[in-house]
Length: 500
Image (cartoon, rainbow, N blue to C red):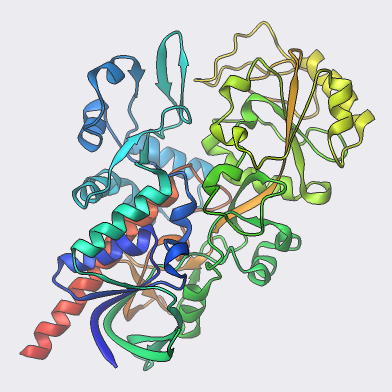
């Protein structure tokens, strides 16, 4: 049986941050990844790479993104995103349910963690085009989200893998951890299924960072509810809740919003699991500039309730609850230049028509008469006297509709019209394990389990009902670094005591 100071289960953003942090203490570190190498990296590989962080002005951003030119800064309003704003967003979108201690750790360590990642070779860039629109020659960032990893999620994983290799961290692929080695007092390793059979690996400390249970249809139906087995999975097919299960099996405390998940509008004909050749582009997130109608031809949600990154993670659930689990997003030519790049890929479920009458006839699964009546009523209700501005909540609303649209309302009157069919794509689940302020997993008596730490999607208590865009990668990095640091410290202290 091999001996390691720290074993990390998983190989995505949270896991690799944990591995790098543990290595800083001098610990020997082994990373066990269930997926084969070409599918490794967890959900991180499938993300667009947006990361939400506190910053107090453009100088903070330039420190993280030194490639920013003076010309780019001159035509851009980056604004600020203070810790108070981050706290407000976290509490508001989670309906004041998020664990205050976890939120404080996330927010107060966000910028410092990105600085640390930059020191490990991770590069960042502004989210041009997805979080800022050019109006009157000037970009304005909105929604508190300004930064993305260079190369998106795949670029982030590649940078972290390279950093791990430089630090002498071993990553073993096709290595599924089956259960923890536990003597009713402390965790001392794992049992792993590999292509060569099952083996036990001993460790002085263990970090679980193996994702949520979103790729497990049985667990989705058990915990999220009836119908959730019908959702598409946006990311890795390997995130089936193994890390959560093996911790619960030894008495770890479950925590958080177990019936909640991050779920978005996702192309209706996307495959069952994420496709790395398409990445995040099956998502369809420009709905604030159009309208969504269901199979009954009815609008069912306020598409302009808030900026996209404060609503997209909860609207997947709303779409799943519609008849036959789909909706059509409808736009006209006044706004198609604002649609994100994901609307222009080859693998997209799209129809176009020169008139609304023809369009509704092409919307598969939709009652065309009801849809045309809905679109006609919509056009009559738009407050055209209010100026349209995609960079701010412009108050351009509707009058007299059962389901209002609070911002960015536009008449559908400029052909050709475009419509995109979406269903629910689940990103990650919100329920998971309870950790303390050191990233250590707690048992059902709320005492820390010696030797066991956790980070990433399988930590519960941070997100409830909804999620501010870009917080998942930031959470994975912050809590991965925390768990790895503490696991490394515990392992090395144990080594020192043993030597004495």
